[in-house]
Length: 102
Image (cartoon, rainbow, N blue to C red; front, side):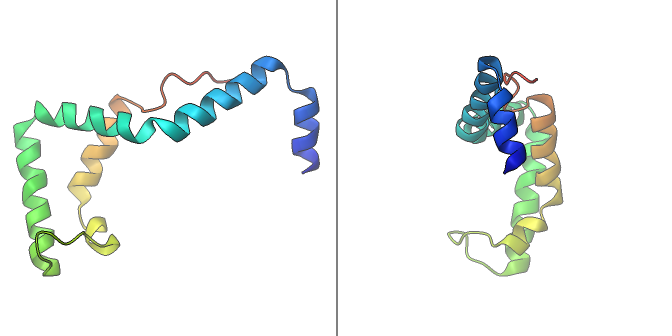
């Protein structure tokens, strides 16, 4: 806490603005922004979309769940390809790109 207090006392208005901007942008719009870019990219790559659908079907069949049931954490961990596509989407279009850094 002493370090935090010392930094707060020496922080400029610009420093505080940067921290608040980061907090608001990273905490508010990142999920919707990230998913929007993901689906936009996916819409132009039908082969990738088909492979993700295949992975989901295989995992659903392996877990024995019904189609209306949510996936559990273990089932989601098995979807390596979906994870890779999501990470690539975020690499290309980082959700909090507009955040100023100091």
